[in-house]
Image (tube, rainbow, N blue to C red):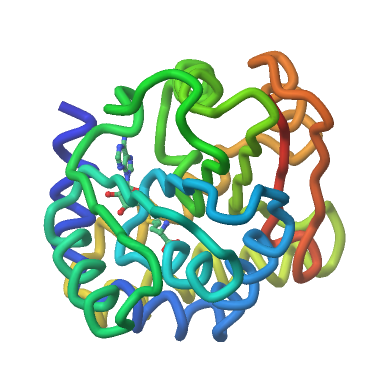
Length: 230
Ligand SMILES: C[S@@+](CC[C@H](N)C(=O)[O-])C[C@H]1O[C@@H](n2cnc3c(N)ncnc32)[C@H](O)[C@@H]1O
């Protein structure tokens, strides 16, 4: 039930998703994805899987930065995937890209088959993070890398208060107005506030068996990139 609600919410906001991402983050989202891909070490001509790929921005960035033999994008919202498909076709990708409508908790990939797995702004939406991380680890090749990009709230202080004012009071209004979906832009800040602080999520990655786990705060702690190896 919960999954159906989230899926239809993303389907509903898909046409305005990119526009609102750029507007609400003042284009920081573009730079954050760039930094996440930059943090990935993977062999040339490796295979990348982007879970919760949405409208395809992570895949497009990965194709710019890395020499890939194939890229897979997986998301359960068909309308988000439709936009990803158009953007990727327009970018004339240098490597084959395959988009799959599936649940990130049940990855349709063989064990030990992926060189790098990414998930941007998606892990906080997956309630069973423990199971998700276990599934990610399973499909990665030994030595493969997981990169997670997620929003956080800045540490306590003036900046946090200012950020929360924007995030809880202003963002839902702008998001609701442009997307015509008030619920979605109320749900999104709430899901960020419920996501654990970087130290705690990094520990979850370690507990799931990832090694060399590290994280880096971006833009005053509004977003964080985490990496870990299988
Ligand atoms: C905030 S968007 C992020 C999209 C994209 N990664 C980006 O960088 O903009 C979250 C995406 O996660 C997808 N999603 C959430 N839970 C999922 C799940 N269990 N399986 C597959 N996709 C999921 C949603 O459909 C949505 O497209």
